[in-house]
Image (cartoon, rainbow, N blue to C red; front, side, top):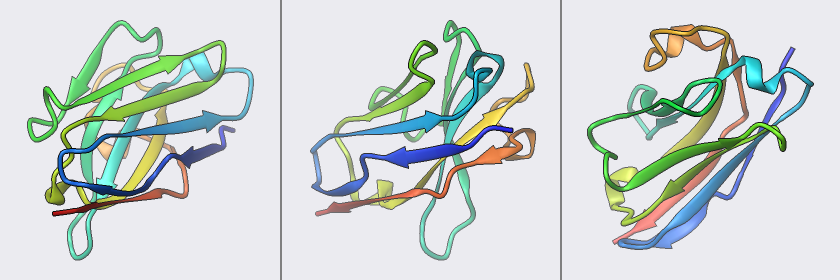
Length: 124
């Protein structure tokens, strides 16, 4: 079992930055690939970024490439999402997720553990 708790969301002006954190419980954090997904009002949940178990491989949605960076600290059981140059279309609830899979890390169905989400609102 893995429990995930996100933090760091908030209200920011367009062009600003936020850093989301996701703290995981348990001793096997390094056994899981981690990802961030988001869901805007009236839209389906979408993939944002993922990182493999060791942190050596990362994956991004085209819409956030060059602006967002995912990273992890396995010693602290934490995954991060640094978001720069935020735009109004980034407004959503952001969810942290954990997967035991090795491939398919951009697909939500590979993730068995989810956090409760943190709201990010970007004002224009």
